[in-house]
Image (cartoon, rainbow, N blue to C red; front, side, top):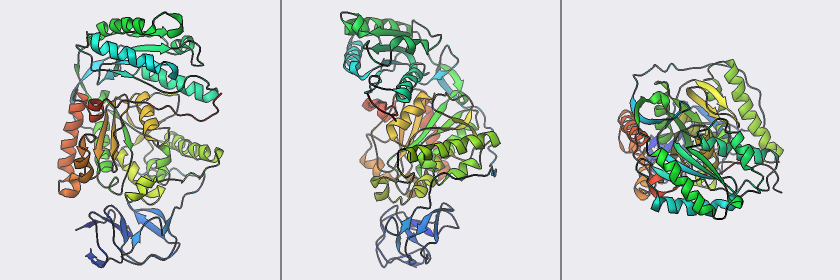
Length: 489
């Protein structure tokens, strides 16, 4: 077969390879060329009729679509609209507990666990990004990094000229980064006159270990780089005493993200990550799904998995609040997928979302985490935030995830300040961008069974948890991006 029917009730098939006009595929004579990962109709579809993929509507036909025709943006329109009312209709799948899988982690004083022992340099304002980089360069040359994995500067352009929620969000995201379990030590660097002031920032950290977290205000000293290097060496001397101890996967929190998706995302990489999500939650661990706009059109599948009615109502709030966000800025909530998504075979936001939520597997949704919160419950969580790759990964890491599983069909080199594991949806991408991609889920289309692929993937992720570097770490691609909504002074 050169195409795939995902669900028995679907009205389209997905091309696994380029198909030619006039070719017979699955008993259907194709009326047009069909590119890899794109869809074709397996029956006549009338104008206004819903088009089904994954067993759910991905939109409706704008015109009559003949059997064997290409089904895409030229003849399909979304069904999405603004806020909706929802009813709790549980539909859960039992996930049986699994024996604990051992891993080796850094135990922190606040009873969290890191998979890296990194020194973070955290500028409170973009004005001192350069000084932070100079301090890092000096420490890499002069410091003792015996048991230290990396030194990462969390560069960003904010912290000054911000008002209201934007200023608060910048402060809060950076505070959450400072106490991240992958950080064995932190040097906080401020200019001294910014809105994001050092004193209230430190107060917001509550009780912290001053031998591991040190602060420096550049305007108050003669040579901030020299003093920064001195403080950094003091922190490194403490971090060098840290060692990994044997724990289990219940201590791991993994973020789930997709970017540069294509028509294979919901067939290969996302379902594979969904199996890992179920694997880790079955061992008492945690997975976290974000990208709220890419739940639109698939939210019913998540609501049906809410652990209880309280969680269901939190999901409703999560979805409708993000739709309000669009409306407040006079934008429609369904202006998605991106041009790259469309080139890759994704037609509507429902098409994208139904593929996106495959990453969450089948576990119950145990909680919803909003902007100012950390993850507090083990199991599958939903996290507030946009679909933007950098912002979403920053949010996931700041919420407490020690690593992120990032599926992609188009490819991206980006990584945030935790290991950001890239999983290709297709073998072509995995071969072309081997310097970006950590794992090839496209092997599923090439004939590898999902069970075999799952076992290979689990071993890959366990190795990364235990210290093997992800490609973004090897490349030094470790960035953050902070969500911004309001006015700049």
